[in-house]
Length: 436
Image (cartoon, rainbow, N blue to C red; front, side):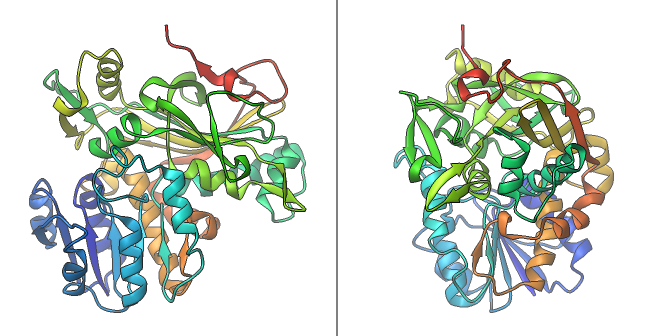
């Protein structure tokens, strides 16, 4: 089997030593990148590196010269259309995996394509095709879905609620009204950076696209009241807030290490896919669905630049971009916060920067949570190579978590009495932090 990586930024580089460790049958790894920032890592591990940006005009020719039936294409890039790659892989019997659904360059900013729209297009192909194409499968989206399932199962044991195999019914029985993908990143490289530099622990380009160029999106709970500032889709399964981005939308959230935190509501694929997974319908009508969204508190250096962007002291187009490759302190705390009638239950991974570096070179805690999931998912795909287009919600969560567990630091659940408001089923307005 040969593997081709499209994109060779922080995740592509972090993934390389893990692929070589876990798949000794690999014939080769080839990487196509739009810049040469990963060249040294590629040379270190024997990756066939090509400085070649894929476009709508050249990607078919490039892939045809690099892949054969039974090989694997991993898309960890920005600005390369996932749906076009999926179509090519289906036709050429090549397995496919990506960490998020992407449009061609400018799709978010100029064509105003949303995560909802991209997912809808992909899900029209769900289960169809001769080979497995696993989309939106990193840490979140991806790993977080498995945390939601496991968290619901553990909360059911705590509360004495019977689980009959349906996670949507279980969420209803547990009284879960909101699911936050609750993350707090405290990693720090303790290095000075130029004032106009956007420092992040994963792709700055990807984060800027989500934070600044896309409207806020979320799965919309059946308990939510009507709002004038939201626009619904698919019988209100998902909504967007026109004119608002994650840059200026913050919510109250909770993680074990700090308790309540202020987090940015960032648009993400899993807000739609998890909401869809946890929907209970009767006679074609929605009986129940929790509100689902990503509540992210990035590392301090990223927050400093975000604050400057919010205050319009800095301009997105003018900032320098740096991925924090070598953090020396801090951790990434990523989990599913299941908010129910009497409190909340957080289930997830707490991984320190030092633990990640010890597990595999080229990794920080954030990238390790992504690549551990990718590696485990590839193993599942090789056992299930003919599933067609699928999401993490279609993959065995026990399989992925069991395989990824050694690379995720401390994994487990924490109960809390935290609630954003003293009501049984808090609505979005109870979580929103209004800027002053």
